[in-house]
Length: 506
Image (cartoon, rainbow, N blue to C red; front, side):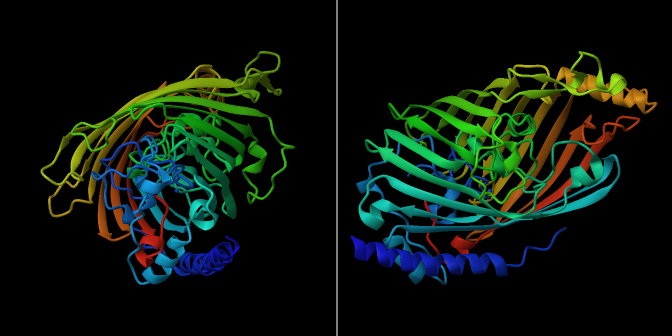
């Protein structure tokens, strides 16, 4: 056992160094992030998740498992350890990759460039370009030292660049999912997964993000707008109700799979926004303000190969951290006119969601080609959060042409409703700036895109985004409402492990 562990450590050092060097030297494409999938219809363009949390049953209606780690079927009952046969790596470093895989070492390295520019609307016209390079390793301790069902996940992330929304248009939801306010190299996740009873029970914990586990699907990151990818994000992320990648805190979750049709999971995570600007190695809890909790019930097809495979998710969440009211001060008077410190709501915030997706039809004999629809609703309970409600619906066609079975065509629309107190605050700020236009109750965000698989591990995705009645959350003193925003975007994603031939955990 010790000999195998020493050999595995040596291979990890060599292989991980190669992947990291590749990530550092890779030039981003020219400008113009696991628990992942519940829908087999969508090939992974990229994933925000730190890792696929459980050894999955891989759907044959999805692309070849060697294409990406993102196609893990989180909500499908995993097979026994003895039934798992990983696909052999292919590429120039395949011999090294096979040796690493034989010792239970899997590497991840992704480079994503996202460009967006508006031709009309918003505060003013401009462009933004952001780059992210998440990378990490997954260590299968069953192969390394004979400990069944145990996997250690290590993830890092480096983000850089500019945001179209922050710098120019003034609306709060970004056109570029990969843009991060704090642009440093950070430890994004360090977590232990333990599968028990042949996958019937899964326990995960460590330095993790709540949204890595809850309401997760690769469908969402077919799109570039942050209202959809990573999760339908406007509510849980903008409201700071659940932590999100790459900002991990102490926490974990337990998932139980009583059958091939049903799962239930629950998790608890530290709420500590003071750690967001750090490099992820500050593990103290001094800045903790509460606890984030979530539960989710999933109902899905027993086989993701079914002609009309489906996945349903019903969940609820709570953050016990006190929330500052956007409109009222501590005396119960409007802040924009009476100043003072914000009214604090000690009860925190909570909400619920109901989401789902299903295959409408398969396109011919190639089961990778199909049409999937998805949608749902997320709602915050209190009125003092930034956003109160989000509803969305979309469609993704995988393999729109028989000659290109891994390409995708996607269209999605979402409605975001501002919280009542946030809306009152924005209206008061507009009046103070001598503006007279009305602050609208909500906004609509739409995206249409095409994802072209250029080669193994490389995808490019041009897109068009449109924002109807955009908010002015980032520019609250603007005198008038922004005009509707028309923006063009472009995403290039390179999964370095797939290109090089290094093993990726599935």
